[in-house]
Image (cartoon, rainbow over all chains, first blue to last red; front, side):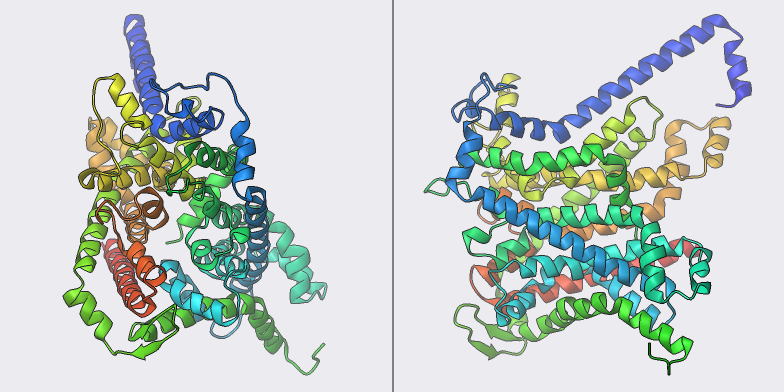
Length: 297
Length: 296
């Protein structure tokens, strides 16, 4: 609203009061709408966590209880007795850490190379890489399975590490790092060039430290991608000791294959809540990283 | 080091060294498999016995002419996509315009709407599957409190597709929301203000000014959402496993099923070729549309 219009309104006190009242009512309606809309986004998490603390019988109590009638930690012990859940947790952590480090290494090198170094064939190579983004990884999973099998790497964690690093997820990383360096003035590095530093020196001592924010965002994306990966573990892993969390969570079933809900929900809580905590703490940066990786067009 | 190289040659060498890991990995894990899939698609290739028989285009003939299931799968995939895309985009647009209001604490809602995006599809599916059970499911218990008897959402063919669509939209809509939100906040304000001064209603401003300005972003989120819906797998496998009575059997799940349950990897590769062609067609279509949008 322009200041002239505002002056017109504020000249009459009765009118002013009405405008203010309307504004407050509007605001209240907006909040109410937002809260109602948020329910299907938030309630599943609430329900998952509160069920984890319930006794198995209370999970299906009618009417449903929003909070457990008495907090029980039994489920949190039983998830470890049913299958090697700690092992699965550790596998997921290890693989996600390896994917993160690998992606940082590969993508920062390639992203820097594509942004800063002149060499023949650069544009063609980069466009080829980008075209991988539209290729669903589901298309290449069968040949990759045979490829890994021929190297005796099925039923190991290697495919779960290398496919994300070099596949579409890694290409997104390369793209993010390249965009970052393209938006950065070259002068910063030229000082180093005059000092006679090599390309590697420039990259390692000057470029990488500046790129810290984009690398942080990239780490989060790579870690989450690996942590949540499902199809690849499902295809490549048989041995229950090598399971990752997504395979583990769906594995809490009775002998007839029906889900043991109290265990599934507890294990899911344990897999999801740490991620949510980190997400809430770093929400601004995390949401921005997703946005910048999404707006690649 | 290497004194006989000119500066330019040295620079070229560094360039190749920097991009080498990414490029080699890309060739081995994406380009070669992509080419291989075309070869596999012309073979009868059993995963268990390891037997490989070249069959030419037989797989494609069977898929297109005989495979009744494929027709079902295609219809399901289209239904799924036709459900997810408009719902997702409309909701994302609505949420983005709500979140662009200047209200105290609005960031909290941004964080809430986005939280399912960072959550694993498996976790999300497990919780919703729990809540959507027939008589003991939370959703139906809540409905019962207000006197409505809900169906067995995931076990009734007429409700299963609806249920997987809605739960997937809730999971993913946050991503499109923030993409649209950042486009909205970056829009030039002058046109909208001018229209307000000229007495246009909010809806008119939205229809005639905001929406056209958002068109490129809308096209982009539409394409990524379409491609995302075409390759849905985790969510379907965990919610319904393609059931009941194949009501939610979609393309990628069918590929997985043929390759790793039936061990027909040649046939599955032919299906994957079809998925690839569809994704390629959509991407090219987007480029063409986009070119036109910029020309105008």
